[in-house]
Image (cartoon, rainbow, N blue to C red):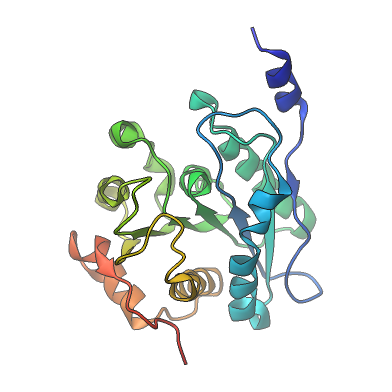
Length: 249
């Protein structure tokens, strides 16, 4: 039986943050999925979403001329909550909402921590063309059971800091290996000396995500490192170092 808090959580609705980007009808939309907790039925705070606003603005700067709009998703609840995988349901709702508002536009999912796992899970939606998972949260023992078939036909980028003490980088590497077996369009970058928040190389991570998202949504050429990572067989394409200064002018 559900507790009163769980009933309240299930009755809430997810929400889209205000759109960022040029006015008019967007030609592509990126949905940003925040971090969260393993368990938690309390309402997700706007603070969690606000942490993704700099990344959202960076993506819009890169793709604004192409008509890229960005929304940060606010979850109904803070937690993944086991088999319920609540952020995945919220991400799928958000994609449906984008389609309802804007019609047949390509959608990219970009998630951090728990949101990274949700982005990969929700990428099977027919409107989604790519998924970006930044330091994705995943219990180490669950890698072998994590679904990956939904990523077929999607382009996938995973980024992880080599000094991540919260979610070891080998977790996302093993997941990327599984995805790569059924999908060639997968790459993974390692950010040397950075931790879970990827704070030391935030500019490079934003530039990498923007390069990938704009390339996927609008069929633009990727940068040489992304092109090489997508083409390289494991382990090279799944352990590609993110160069200091990537994206700099």
